[in-house]
Amino acid sequence: MVRKPNELIRRPVQKGPTMLPTRALANQWAGLTTLASGSTSQVVSTTAITSDSFVFLGTRVNSVGVGHNSGGNIVVNSIVHGVSFAFARATGSAVAWDEVVMWEIKRPN
Image (cartoon, rainbow, N blue to C red; front, top):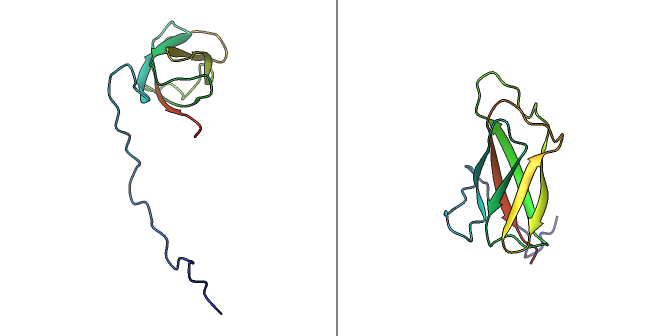
């Protein structure tokens, strides 16, 4: 077997979680925001959002014993270029517990 000169025999292994440096400024591009009990949507103000941005969302329920996402999936429902974006429950119905939404903005190169 002939090995090509640019072939890797071993590749690097990630041995821990990816860490994101965040800051609470106008150009914040990742963070945690609480979708409060009784509300269906939340606005996040950041100048890092553009109309061609990808917003990745993840959730975790703060209340003990409440099923994950039982109030419906969380989706981005509006983007204001360079100003803010809003996320909401896909069902449009409010639930009786707080839910923390973890988000990250990625822009195409």
